Image 1: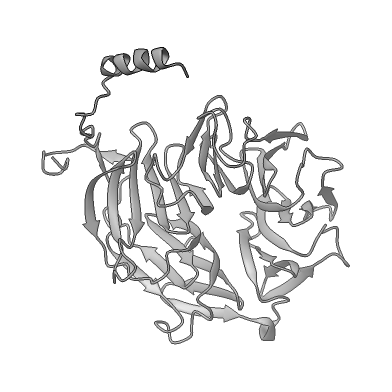
Image 2 (image 1 turned 180 degrees about the vertical axis):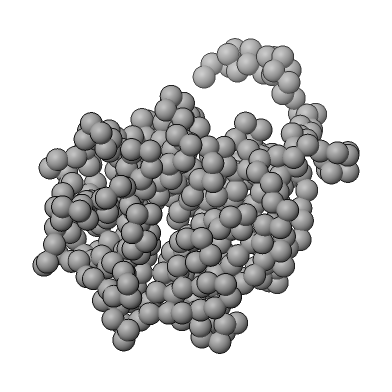
Length: 387
């Protein structure tokens, strides 16, 4: 760049409010977000072995029931009581990384990492794998229910099983726009099925038209997000969540929101995300989403005002986690919690009424939603606004 051009740009900085004397912009809350401060934590030690393994891959709520997929089998927590199933109890494979429940039959479907699919119905496990079904691969990362269909995301594509007709359909690079067949996650709602392909972006299946559509990072840059909000933030996607006609997508480089016309991307340096490395997310509504990162839980409370609550331990030796209320990447105030899990590596999250559950590499936690409210509550005083 020519010196004259640099000088010209420097002279323009004050016009845009930039100068060496600038102080950080004061940001106030548009409203008060709900913060989970009371938590229950569960580990094998704290439950005397009832939680059979501390490596929690998936948590799925169903009314009063909480189904938990672990490295050693299936666990059910219901009204303070525990029950578990291992391979000794008929479970066909011990590592459970995904759970889906049929709203029509109540059947519990399990994604088995290396063991295919299992259906748990009336106390019996039915096993589906490459040798006895249309499952495209036995390494199943996720499972979801769409009507009578069970969708499975595998390391070699996606399979769809119609539980009424018994027919299977397989989708790979041969009949779907898959640049990468390693399918990491799948979610279904409102006549849509979304597949998160690890290295292939997000694929959308329209149930009525039976047509695929793909979403990828338009700038095609692996290392950076070259143009903000131009599309999916990165093609290495780890999960998709579709709620209130809003698509939420997680990647190892940030989070994206898509309303059908406009994209919005978030990374740790410009938001309340503890880290851009996101293992999983779940949308609570079209304006709120919970992101499980390798450094804690990032919750976008209100999309319009960019209000967040970030849950993490402030230091490695901190005994409990802190909840930071934020606007964008600026902390407005911090609240102590009694959450004491030692591991920040969040793997899964789900909601049970007003409560929230999440699993980590070393235990399970439930946030108690006493007095919970959605979105933002009107701020009554300057003290509550953090001024």
